[in-house]
Amino acid sequence: MISAVRAVRTAFTWLTVLPVAGRDVSEAPDRALGGAVMASVPVIGVALGAAVAGLALALSYTGFSMVLIGVLLVATLAALTRGMHLDGLADTADGLGCYGPPERVTEVMRSGTVGPFGVATLVLTLGVQAAGFAGLTDESRWYAIAFAIAVGRLGAVVATRRSLTPAHPDGFGALVAGTQRVSVAVWCGVALLAALPLGLGGNGFDAVPVVQGAGSVVAVVVFAWLFTRHCARRMGGVTGDVLGATIELGVAIALLGLLL
Image (cartoon, rainbow, N blue to C red; front, top):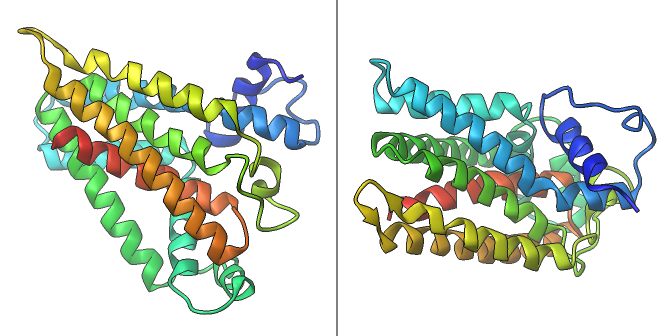
C-alpha cells in the first residue's frame, strides 16, 4: 500500500521541477506507485494553480499588458512542469496527424522531431491558454486561474481509467495506464464542489461563475474520456505523451469555460 505522502511527494518529483525527493524516490517505480501518483495528480494541479495565480496577482500590479501577463503565466507553468506536457501535446498531435496502423503512429511520436501538426497544435493551445489567463487576470479572478489549472489535471486521471491499457510494455504509459478506478469519480466530485467558491465575491454570491466552473469540469472530463479513447484506438493504448496532451488541452478547455 503506497502512502498518500509518498504518492504526492513522488508526483511532485516526477511531474514538476520542484526537488521534493525522499529516500524512496530512487527506488525502481512500479504500477502500484504509478497508480498512486496518478491519483495524486490533481493535488499537483492545485499547487501549480496556486503558484500561477499568485504570480498573476503580483503581475497585475505592474504596468504589463494583459496579453504579456498571459504569456508569462503560460511560460511559468511550462517551466514548472519542465515542458513535458507540451512535448507530449506536440508528439500526440503529430501521431494523430499521420496515417497508418498503431506502429506507424508510434514511430512518428518517437521520432524526436516536431512536425507541422505538432507546431500548429502547440501554437493554438498556448494561444488559447495565454488569452484565457489574460482574461481572468483582467477580471481579477485569481481562484479561477488556479481552478482551471487543477481541473486540467483531472483529465490525466480520466486518461488512466481502468478500461484503457498501455500502448507499450515500457515507458510512463506502462506504469500508469489502466490504474485508476474510484479516483476518477472521487476527483470529479471534488472538482464540482471546488467550483462553488467561484461564486464568492465582494457583492455576495453569484451563481453564474459556479455554473461556468461546473460546466468546465464536465467539459474537461467528457473531452478527456473521448480524446483518450480515440488515442488508444489509434495508438493501441495510452502513452505518457497522451497524458500530457490531455492535460494541456484540458487547461485550455477549462479556461474557455470559465470565460463564457
